[in-house]
Image (cartoon, rainbow over all chains, first blue to last red; front, side, top):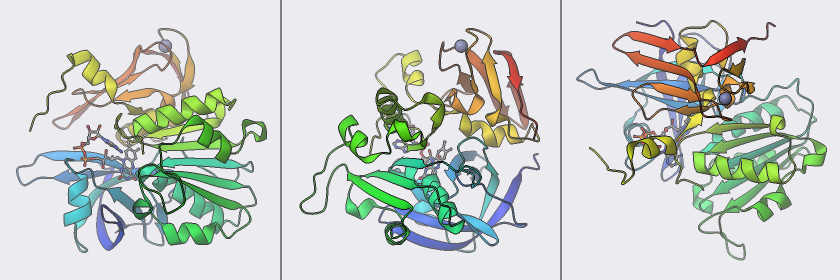
Length: 241
Length: 99
Ligand SMILES: Cc1cc2nc3c(=O)[nH]c(=O)nc-3n(C[C@H](O)[C@H](O)[C@H](O)COP(=O)(O)OP(=O)(O)OC[C@H]3O[C@@H](n4cnc5c(N)ncnc54)[C@H](O)[C@@H]3O)c2cc1C
Ligand SMILES: [Zn+2]
C-alpha cells in the first residue's frame, strides 16, 4: 500500500540492561539519519493485525542504524522487541523521519541534553554525532535514571566524558550508588546541573510525557527561552524517571 | 485486554499525549519534505508554532493534533483499511521553509 515501508534485517542484538536491548538493523539501501530522528516500526500478527510504534535512532552504522528499546511489561510491542526478536528476523521500518528534534553539526552553540530513562536514546545519537565531528561546542547530558543498573551505554558515556567538550551527570531516582542521594529530579537539582539560560544553550528534552512536561516547565521558570527548548515525548504521564 | 481508567472518557483521552514530532512517519507518506518542521498558524487563536511542537493525542481512533495555546484541533489523521484521511482545516495556514 505504501512505498515508505522497507524490510530491515536484524543483524545484531546487545543487552543494555535486564529490561532493554539495542537492536542493530540493516536496510536494503543506506539512508542518512540526522541525530535525533526516529523510525516507525510495524509488526504484523498472523491474523493480519498490525501495530506501529516509534523508536529513536541511537546511532548510525555503515549499512543502517541501531535503536534501543526499553520493555514496558504490559506493552503490546516492546516486550517482543526486547525478549523475542532474533538475529535474522526482519522488521518493517519507515524512516528515519523528523526534522525538528535534531542536532546539526552546523549549530555552533552549547547544547544541554536532558533525558529520562529510555529518553536518553536520541540524545545519545546527538552525543555520538558531536564526538564523531570532534565538534567544539560544549555538550552536557543530564540523565535521569532509576538506578545504576538501568543506565544505557554506560561505558561509552564514560569514555565520551573524557573529552573536554562533553559532560554527563546522572540523577538516580530510585536507587543510587553508595554515598549518593536517590530521588526524583526536581527544579533545584536541575538548576544545579544544567547550563544556565544566560549561555543560551539549545536544550533537548526527551522521555516519558510526564518527565518532559515537568522538566520543560522548570526550565522556563529558570529563565530558559521557550524557542531554545525542543522536546520529544514518548508517552506515559505516570513515567517520570 | 481492557483496563478501565476510572475517569470520564474525555479526561482519560486527554491525559497522555506526544509531540507533533511523532507524526513525521505517517506524514512522510503524504509530503515529500518533513512537514513537522513547518510553521503552522492556529485557525482558532492565531498562535504560531512548528507542527512538531503541538500536542498529539494518539489514544483516539484517529490521531489528533491540538494547539498548545488554545486546545483547538489543528489536524486529524485517520489511517484505516489502506486509506489515509488527512484533515488540516484547523490551521489558518502552514509555512514551509524552502531550502
Ligand atoms: C518519537 C518517539 C520515539 C520513541 N523512541 C523510543 C526509544 O528510543 N526507545 C523506547 O524504548 N521507546 C521509545 N518510544 C516509545 C515507544 O514508541 C512505545 O511507546 C513503547 O515501546 C511502548 O510500546 P508498547 O507497545 O510496548 O506499549 P503499549 O501497548 O503501547 O502500552 C504502553 C502504555 O504505557 C504508556 N507509555 C508509553 N511510553 C511510556 C514510557 N516511556 N513510560 C511510561 N509509560 C509509557 C503508554 O501511554 C501506554 O498507555 C518512542 C516514542 C515516540 C513517540
Ligand atoms: Zn490555538
